Image (cartoon, rainbow over all chains, first blue to last red; front, side, top):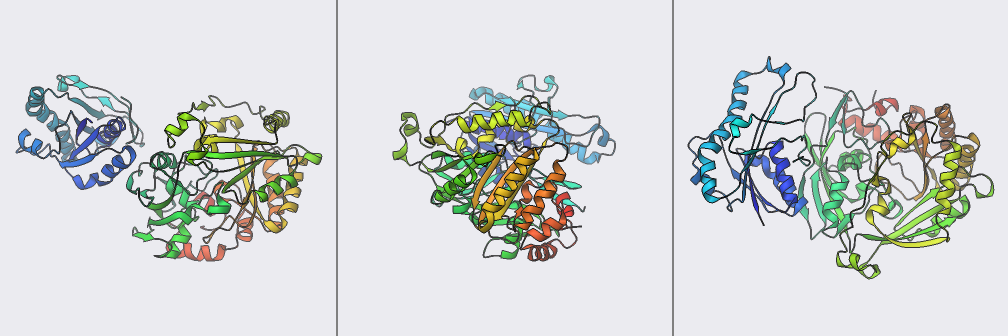
Amino acid sequence: MSNLLVLGATSDVAQALAHRFAAHGFNIVLAARETDRLASVMSDLEIRYNAQVHTVEFNALDYGMTILTFTMTLPAKPDLWWPACSATWEARTWRKADFSRSREELLTLITPARFLCSTLWPTILRNAGPVQSLASVLWRETGDARVTTFTAAPKAAFSCLSVRACATGCSSRMCM
Amino acid sequence: MDGIIARGNGGCYGDSALAPNVISTLRYNKFLDFDAEAGIIQCQAGVLLSDLVAVIVEKGWFLAVTPGTKMITVGGAIASDVHGKAQHHAGNFSDHLLEMDVMLADGSLVTCSKEENPELFWTTAGGMGLTGIILHARIKLIPLETAYFKQQSIKAENLDKLMDLIEDSEPWPYSVAWIDCITRGKNMGRGVIMRGDHARLSDLTDDRQKQAPLTLKPKLKLNVPIYFPDFALNSLSMKIFNNLYYHKQIPTKVEAIVGYNTFFYPLDSIQNWNRIYGKRGFVQYQFILPKDNSRQGMHEILGRIVDSGIVSFLAVLKLYGKQNGYLPFAMEGYSLALDFPIVDGLFEFLDQLDEIVLSYGGRLYLTKDARMSKDMFMKSYSGVERFLEEVDGFNSDNKFRSFQSDRIGVTS
């Protein structure tokens, strides 16, 4: 049985990934800042797919965290690491946006990439574990409806990774 | 924000889940707990019955009550207090609901069951979403040995013989009848009754079924890719369809072992089946009459339908038992569900049928209703005063309302 580690697991994209992999027989480790928000995600994955699911705390903004301290919290060595980082905003609401919040969102987007490239990636390479990532930037000109199209972030930011584009808006459905 | 209604998968045929503000529960769709020993599952209200059934069947459990489609949410099943082929035996969905959490108009979250806050429980079950938003449910399941059913299909050449067969089938836990609403004369109301029971392991004959008794072979889904033209469903084409359907079964009685999808959810295997009715759509008209005068009433209504030239594409006849709750549709009696493609004069004709239904002490099913008048609703639903009183207690400012509840006078 393979183990998948999803970083940033409270996001819908991350949960869609977890569903897809659990359906294929993976055991799942959900890592996020607020693990209490993962209780229903965990029970859902366990009941739907008979998967073993664990949650661990992970904060990409915690500059004091090292790969060693983080991996020590994991229940098993992951066969696949999948950081799922996303940011969403709309062009029309951008003008009215609270920029302190936007900064936080941008940091959330960029910091895992930094973390991944500088610390995680070399470590994983040494352990010969594959890594895939899905980064999403949502941009929409008009309309109030929630947009569910995700596009790949600039590939340069993840040049060492395999970035895939997908369209999903639902935690239980996903295109890969 | 006033004028809110919770909406599941949009399976109601009318406007019961439409309002100025609609809250979709579809993303609130997680399983919370499953006790595989006791057969009790807890989930959020947006879980689809299709997902629920997929999870529980492989673990040897099934829903005690399931409607003819699994493309509805748990919350919708509670709000409509749905029933199915087992209504005369197992009652309605709420009879197997152990507990639910409801968010009331003031934002408070209240747990209710038949013992705890029973007023809220019985007003919410079948209450069409007017007490609040159903968030979580705990459901008691029934055990399964296999995912298959023993099914018998028996033809009857007219309405009386069909109703005799339905009454003879009362010991069967599941029964429902297809009825021909076009043929006149001595064969008026001819039909086919389908009755069944859970297949035990010893009933299975196919090796593949025996090896994996709780797993069904994946079935190809059909799709109706385009809307049929409005003239496609006419009296001639429907007469041909009815003749083919009735005569496709040559012996009077046929027995078969079928999977639960074929037994319970035949329409779910045809995606976009509503396109058969064309862009004008259709109206579903389901009524129930008390058992004492059901035969006379069904004869009169079928006669009116046959004479009117307005044809029903599909019609389903079923014997019901009692229903709990403050707004029960079911009573001991017969229900007929009709699908009328929308044609000129249909709504006037349905008004006439309403009067006949009312004269026999019957009522219409709110979940499938799109047009019932306030007068018809108030006169036909016997528990309505108590229901209005309770709804007023939980939803005094009419925060929760739908276009249907406004139309039938529950909210205004």
